[in-house]
Image (cartoon, rainbow, N blue to C red; front, side):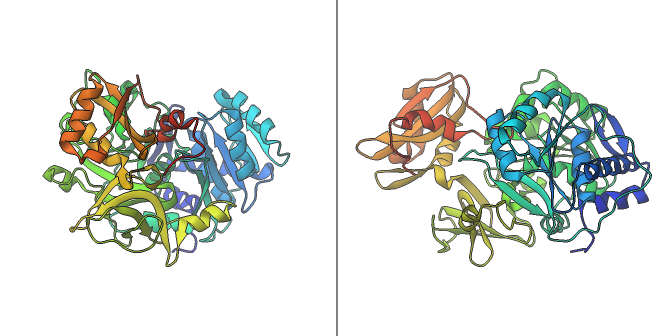
Length: 504
């Protein structure tokens, strides 16, 4: 790794080389690389005045905005780390994150000032300084700050979405981020002439990553605070966006728009973060004919994607249900759940990853870190799947969401993939529910216009009998987190209210 790499040093270099090049466009306006560099300097001085120094954390609670970029780059100038906070959480949950991260400063956008104050009070940490201001950071000072970064410096603390429990702080170092960014072929669709669009929330790894990815490559980032279809489609056309990050849920919203414009400049659509049905994917490919589609798979703990299904493979259309193959320098293996014995191609199990870009662990959580990391540098993803003979990864489910019915393992994701093609099913979540005979049995929770009998019959026609749901409930919508992942825990909990524990 280059000894001097950090968010701040990379921005400084790009600003020196191309000061007038467009860097960032937000609702507040447009910034050249020189202006963004100056914004970072102003943030660094403001944070230092509040006592921020090397190793400290700076939290940001607010929408996708220039203030987040100021925190990201300004904190980096001080060898401090940024922490994006989920403004959709209630104050008590935010307080738990604050108590864990212990930031020196909490920067809150004006529209979230009340929430920030309630969380600040609940955290009861006198060391935290709360800053809420419309014009943060202040005017740019004359003297820039450039502390020399180290590879092991904490660059970002990103909290998991909590789909399987309480959020955990994932450590991202300068070294891990740089290893991912410089990986050969990691971002073939990004260069200095690119215009990238990001509407994923910056408190998630993907949303934050698509702030520093364009900065590393000298591209122009269009950062949207809203993910509604009209705003996205207008921005794609107005800014002549060449590559966009769109989670499957957002793609689905766009497909329902009555007037998708011609977008000749849009060359690449990157999707991931949650499952997508083949039907939705093929519809999207037809709706955006100029764009090549790229699927990426990764997690907060891998500091970026670790596999990719390329544009050419999408055009071939033969492996659309796979998550692609590993990047150069990334190793994958599938092992028996709960063990380390590697399984042969085609056999389902737990996916593990080994690469320099993976996290060294969770913030101040030795027990969770020990569970995450395995001997030999392997990281447990917690995802279930298999690798086929050609080296393509196929995801089935979360290991913790595996249903054990009568001694047989059922992966909910496999059942969901089948039911997604059932006529009348618009959305589906499969969970295990208590059963006095089998321990647990398979239930489908469906959004759509069909009947329980038809859903069960369809499943039995396409799956082994023990994998098919034995009951079906219908709901108006399924709970999802901001990145589009179904909150399976919330779907499952009501069925286990009278049970002492989950069967997993």
